[in-house]
Image (tube, rainbow, N blue to C red; front, top):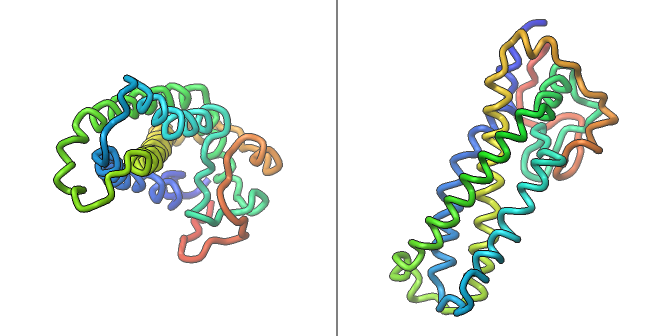
Length: 200
């Protein structure tokens, strides 16, 4: 086996996605600053958790995000090399679920902080229509993005922490197993432009 699996560009591309989290949280805060909160205590938090937190948790727990993809395009499973199939097998280890739980707890903590402090952002949105449902919807979508771009980089960190020896001992997944075990976004291509190909 040649180069270290840590040279795989897709790992670092998705790790870098963590920079989206603060932007998503800021957008969420602005959305939640719109209008007057509903009087029924907890209904907004339940909505935000249901729309913005739960889908990402369920995905990462059962069918983790398949990292050999960019936005709306993804590498076809039958185009993945053996080392890439080996990397995917690392995402299915039991310890990755502990990372998912950690990310979920962080996500809930961020929700509480943003929801609690959202009123301080009101001066930034005073010129916008004060429609609470619209703000809540924007907040939920932004919270979904924050959780996605938190969970995926955390899962990548779990894989990057694997030793080269343990990586070499991992059993590569079969290409025909990937669709059943992973969430694959977008159009499937044999090669994604501009992403360098690292030979094994």
